[in-house]
Image (cartoon, rainbow, N blue to C red; front, side, top):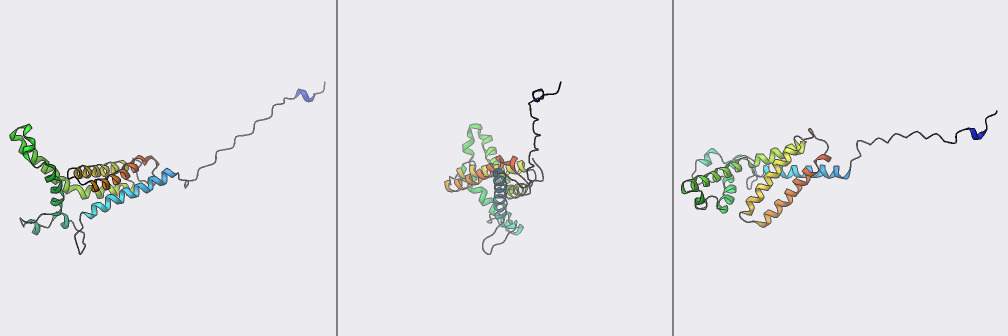
Length: 199
């Protein structure tokens, strides 16, 4: 019996699946571009703010002596380094320098607590420019990104809290804008590119 057309299967062969187009290495998403721009902005804000601590008045020079003072300057009892002036503005206006505010912990301990706060403020003032510069460089080159963003963010947060003691609302608002930039750059970290490390 001869084969009839009806004896053949009417099913058509399925077309072969086409391979998905390869994504170009240069096809960046909007979030990637935003992450890179925020990263550069956050890094430069930290670096330039840290370097600015070493700046003198006119004529403008940059030196650690402008911030910490030279040995000859420190030998003068009337000389107050720039670092101490910055720290004392917050320390004196916060009330943390007054032992009477800590009498609840005992009269003997109140003086020690006030001195401990003074020591902490002094050490923070010493390390402040370097914390800014180092964290800014880490963010800019993409090395230990999250560590750099965290340290930089904590620096801005500490400065905001310090300004609230004064209070200087205009400075607080400016610092809050910078803090938001730092937090935004950290939030977009997974979209970041051109990093030495992914962490």
